[in-house]
Every structure is written in structure tokens, then in C-alpha cells.
Length: 385
Image 1 (cartoon, rainbow, N blue to C red):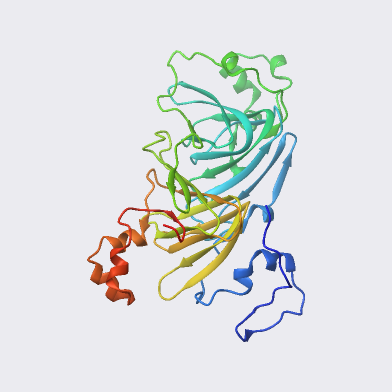
Image 2: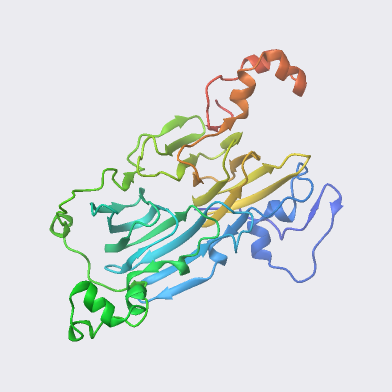
């Protein structure tokens, strides 16, 4: 992807205000965040930071891959959701484990096998690939194993204070349980348990699994009633003048009982329209392209942030905002919410469905221009509506 060439080193100055920065500085970061170095004139006041990049997160290196996380520790405003970026090499496992939080996932690259057993002993086993989702309710034990090409995926948990380092893992659990208890529980002998791990394995290397059907186990209680995967990219998108939107919540993915999401693709020159979410904070993950988000926090407060692939954004509920594509390729990102239903309010739709003179008088615009606004919701728009 080509980004606009910078003609000169940027400085914090605009229209005769500000000045040059001749002291120590990180020019690469200034180039990536022009709207922080020189904010638009519409920015005002003190608004909390709403951006953190996975590139600045601590990476945990393991035998079978790596992982890094963005929680409330890295992004203090993010109270409702936390995220993990994880890579598994071909055949590697994210070991048998469970969480106190629900786990929502999006496959970024590659493919993997995931399996789970619920509280009734009902089975789940499936292979997922780029653009697929999965969701495991809290407490449900599961595992992930990379297929022949390896896999990278985004995990999202429904608590901002979640940490991947506090997961409940089978190897850790068993290593902290007396062997005599394990022997009674499973009917094993000391010799049979001689090679059990002495600590957690977490991410470790294995063999690429066999074809899916040969791995299936028939449970006497059957399969889980609501399948834990969803083919998001196979879902027909809503198409608009400025791009596309795919919305996945409990109405289309029944298993996803605590998290909803939208996959947004904004074409060059387009914007994710002026909107806000009436009940829930928004956690964002940027997949490709680059652009900026403007956020209105009421009381005259506003701030602009720049985003590119691998960045995480966050918007508290009810804050008005937009996302604008500043590049020459599509800007693609996920919007996620701790709510089983996706909800947003469109500024355009709101105005178009009021008595037109009300909006016209409020913003000093001709009534005819208000009457020309579309009454249906169009989340991604460009100048050519």
C-alpha cells in the first residue's frame, strides 16, 4: 500500500500558529500521526487517548508462535473489551484452556482447527479460515491448533481488564494438582503420569492435524446447539456509495451472546458517517489502509486520531464520531461492542426524519437541503451518495 509522500519534515504549526520542533523527537511517529502533531482546528480541549497500536504492545514469544495484547493497562479508557493478537505456526497449539470472559475471534490470515465441549458434554469441532469468526462463552473449555499454513487471529474478550496471561490452562491446572488426586480422578498410575508437564505449556508445537472428519468425536449428548463459528466474509455485505458493511450479532450468529461486531470497508475518499452508539463503547481494530477518526465528547471537546493496520481505537458510548479514509486503497476495520445486538444512530437519518425546519433552523441551512437527505441509514458514504 502506498501512502502519500511527505514533502518535508512535519512541524506543529498551522496558519501562523505553533512553530517548528527542533528538539529531540520521533519523526516516524509524527509522520504517522499528523492529526496529533498538528490537530485540525475543530479539535478542542482535553480528550483522553483513544488509540494504541499492537506494534507498541509487549510480545510474548513461545515455542509454537507469539502473542500480544491490548487491555485497559495499555489503553486506560477501554473498560469494556480487551484484545489479543496471536500467531500459531503450522501444527502449533493454543493449549486446552478456558476463561472467566467470553472469547470472540476473527481470523486475520491462515487457518486453524478449534474445538470445545460445553457443560452438557456436547461437542464442537470446526476449521476456520481468513474472515471467519468464532465465539466461546465464558467458562467453556476449548483449544486452537494451526493448520498447514499457520494462523494469525484477533481475540476480543468482554472485559477491558482481561489478560491472556491469566487464562485457566489444563497443563497448569494438572501441574498444581497432587498426582495422587489425578490418579484417583482419572484412574492413572504414577508411571503413566511420569511425563506430565510441570508448568503451563500455553503455545507449543504439534503436528498439523488430520482431515477434519477423522478428528471428530461422537458425544452421547450430541453437538452444541448453537454452532460456535460464523463465516463473516461469506456474508453478503450492505453496499453503499462509500463502501460496505457486514454486521454480525446474535441475530445472525446466535452463539455470540455478549459481543457484536461490524466489518467496515471504506473506499478512498469515503467516510464511516457521523454517528454514535447509544448504549455501548466501541472497540476498533484496523486491518488495512490508513485514515483518521474524529471524536466529539460533548461540551465543546473534540480530538482527532490517525489509524493504520494493527492499531486499536476506542470510543466511549454516546460520543459522536466519524472515520475517514485518507489513502488510495480501502480502509478496513472492525467495530466491536459488548452487547449481543449492534446499534448505532446516524446523524443523517436523525435529521432526515425530523420536521425539516427543525434541523434547518438548528444548523442555519436551507430547508431544501435538509429535505434532500436520505431517510434510510447509509453507514459508509462518499460525496456521491
